[in-house]
Image 1 (cartoon, rainbow, N blue to C red):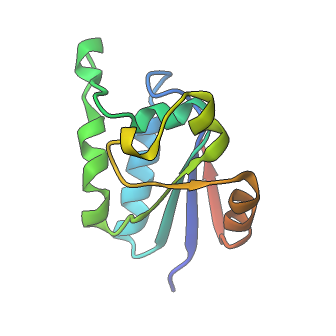
Image 2: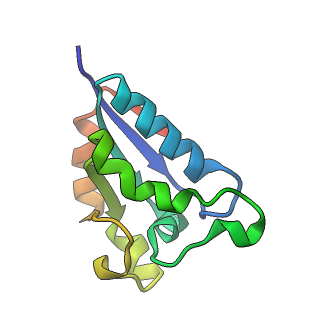
Length: 119
C-alpha cells in the first residue's frame, strides 16, 4: 500500500550531508512505490539554485542528480515562499521545477502525509 511521505530539508546545501540524505531518502521511498513529496525550507532552498557546484568543495556534486527526480516519479517538490523571499530567489532561478508554498499551504501539505522525515 502506497503512503504519502514528505521529506523536509531545513539546512543549507553545504551544511553537512542533509540535502544529499534528503535526495537519497526521496529516491528510496519512490523506488518502494511511495507517494513522495520533498519540501525545502529556510536555507535549504539554496540547494535548488542554478549553478551550485559541490565539486569545488571536494565533495560529490549531487546537485545534478536533483534533475533526475522526475525520472523516479518524485514530481512533488516544494519550496517555502518565505525562504524564497528571504534569499531573493525566483522560480526561474531554480534548477528544477518546484512549487512555491505559503506557510498555510505547507501546513495543509503536512496534514496530508502518512510519514514525515525532517532533516
